[in-house]
Image (tube, rainbow, N blue to C red):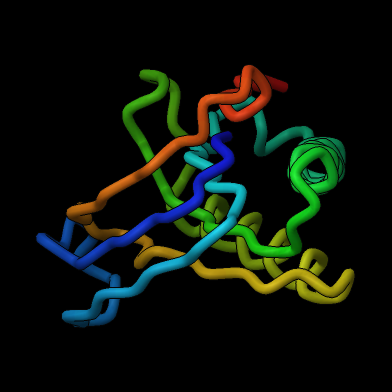
Amino acid sequence: MFYAPSFWFRTHEKTLQQAPDMDIEGSAEKSVVVFYQAEAKDMDEETGVLTKLVKNIKWLAGKFGTKHVVLHSFGHLSLSKAAPDFTARLIGEAKTRLAGSGFTVVETPFGYLNEWKLHVAGDSLAKVYKEF
């Protein structure tokens, strides 16, 4: 997770055949940017993983006084990947919970490689790694 004064993205290449076709770009300011990957073991612990994910995002957002979040699928973090439908469902539920708590959530297109620009703040807490 990163605290980013600015984040920009644009779709580049579809990697999941079942993903809808799209060509979009977007941006966010003063946001917690979350690079996430669900692992195979997470499929057996969905409720706990979801709770920890949302809790950690809210914690970091609170440290920077922001209610803006970017969720970015980054399936390069581990060799153990959960099924794409599980990951999409998990992140969809995280997005719903965050929005229900007053957060504005931007999600980069799932199933795509995306071009992006990330400006990370210099504070030590602007770069946080969590694994659960």
